[in-house]
Length: 252
Image 1 (cartoon, rainbow, N blue to C red):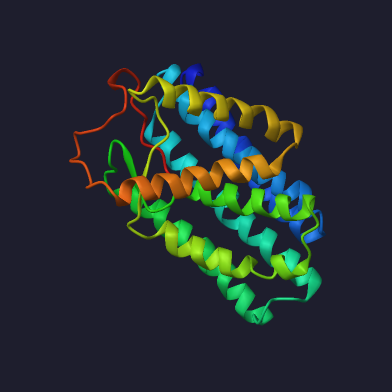
Image 2 (cartoon, rainbow, N blue to C red):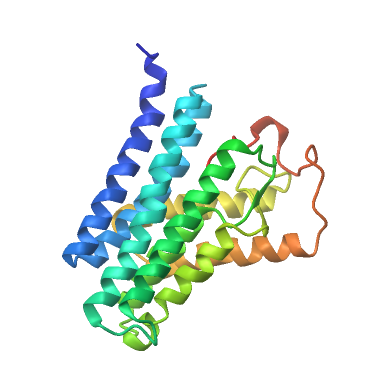
């Protein structure tokens, strides 16, 4: 029997997987708002399981593979199902046929599967992600939908959901560099990161301020990619991460 210390991180991963399945089912039933929130809850659990595993010294190969399966469901299948079923309900695809919409949703899921498979066989960089993490893309899709719903932006905006999935699919399998979220040497940056992460863990369970959560996801994505574009890629040993609290490699 595995040691009890593995129970907590693996329970977070299991709950994340269940949330992903539930989100896809709710999208098929037309409960799109709750389906989107479940994806965001999966984001929180995905970050929590790695942190708990490190704190409990409970990292394992099983946990890594289990996390990949959960990520595939909650950040691949669930966001694709959210956009597909929501647009199918309106019959407005902004120039996309229903078959085209299905193909784009499938490409998004396939891109995340490729990303996760590549991560599991290729050693990652200590400080950087190559390609936009699936966790981040799932957050952008879910928070983007909830922001659209909150402000009643109308079908004209929602029609670009397929384009978002297509861009997201390409971004996940691209070589764009983005810094990993970790403790830094800059105290100010650490305070900024900690404050926003804490806010996300408070707001998302309460189903509040999806626009703020969207802004955080976009800021991290656009800011991180822009920062990396103007800097050369550091060698594998170099990082501004605090060496006492290095991020553990996690599928994303």
